[in-house]
Length: 177
Image (cartoon, rainbow, N blue to C red; front, side):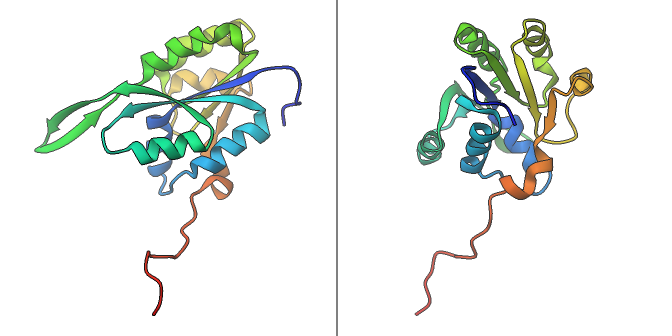
């Protein structure tokens, strides 16, 4: 556990990488529990969640904000692939940009992604003494990030499945007569 101090800890979260990573392991993340985990374990005071904006998902965005995330939206593109409509909203540039915009406002940063595209950002934060942790969704993170594992920066979120998984309530939306 990180000591609570005057340090300002910010988290920068690649929502697509996190969401698809845990889903590939057969479970769903409880976003409220995840925000609480960041607050309790690492004393994260600001958690920026980078997400593609899709019309019709307003209730999801409101829920994520209620959980305590600061949402940074990326416009999305629709395209056809194999006859299906796909939505693309790559947030990598926004995550890097906002991490640098906020650079003087935090003491240490947590990057939540297993994507090797963040290697140069993570390397820079480490050199400047600003990297606290990298939270990778699964064991299948980029090989570019392996060097940070040997320095105890890397934490796998899938190892905390039991405490971060969205539990099924068993309620199906109908009450018994």
